[in-house]
Length: 445
Ligand code: ATP
Ligand code: MG
Image (tube, rainbow, N blue to C red; front, side):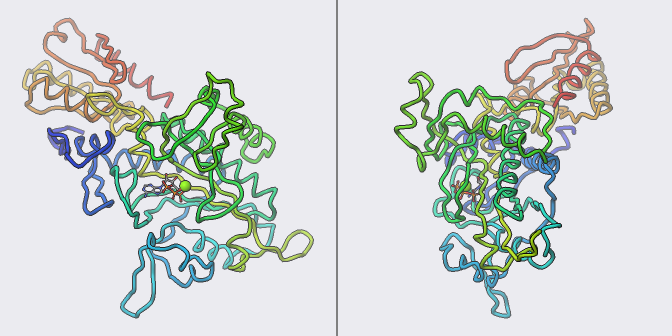
């Protein structure tokens, strides 16, 4: 993409109403625009990041054997009356009446709808296990929408639902989700720690939240620092292997890590003092096992291998896709702007032409642009007639992890400069070497 033809409405001033850094930077970098309280448009740069987050979530869900689909945003109130949640949910639910006086709602989550789909089509244990998921907009009429996309009213969520014949296999589905989530967040360049949580209005016995440590997080968290040393890495996991998934879950749940809702002072104090940490955290996902809470009232039953009709065991598993855009920035920024991890960056590499209109500089930039594209990479070429300082400031603000700087002086010696946004370190090399280096970096992402 050439910046002269792109739509990147960056702001020079700090927006007054944004209280936390990610909100400020998303507005300044032209990623989002607020349309109403807690409701945002995703401008081109923000939309690219959102799509990248979504792509990683899809890839990891599919890797774990979960099946993508799409349910509507609007739901019939009658379904929610069956589970008893139409009345229980309260003012967070946006209720709508259509022209025929039928009650609808903008879905805050989809347990009822997925249970309805299941009971319409599945009747035997032979069709299980089954995990269906979608990535769809949700609406929760939050009392205090704030912090930009971190606590919106309309927000994008991945929500997945497992259906299993008994508790044991449903617990395997729970473990499988935990493992796939560990990998998902790590691929985005985030450390999200699974913490024992409280089940809240969705209900259930087993639940973990995934928290990103950040001073602006809304949850208070307590953990053993040993957990922050764990790395998922490039493990090849067989997601059908119960013992293997369980062992990974054990590894990540052995060190103490809890939110204030489930915090246990005595257990915490048993950790060696130097490893005892308290912090704030941003919830970027949650997994639940809730048994037959929905299948029983809604009649989602299967015939088991004994010929008995039993309510199916379920769980639901969410990832805050749009919140992650904010959480990623909370965890990756400096005074000059965003620092995208390679896994989610909106463009792989920036190209800054220090002297637009100089024949050699223009030709070198065009060459780099083409060569990067040929490697399957998407560069953002700042081809505007702007001062170098302004171009650097824009690149730093929008946070592309790599920048190639091209100027007539370097070109006389046959070199351009490759700069890491994260470390600020620059290295001179030939344009060909710069392309090869950037391609090599992304080959491992
Ligand atoms: P919170 O405690 O932050 O209100 P929740 O526990 O009610 O969230 P879940 O039902 O667990 O939310 O939803 C799954 C994920 O969706 C959460 O882990 C979070 O990342 C995201 N999410 C929930 N509410 C919002 C919101 N208002 N804006 C953006 N993302 C949200
Ligand atoms: Mg939650």
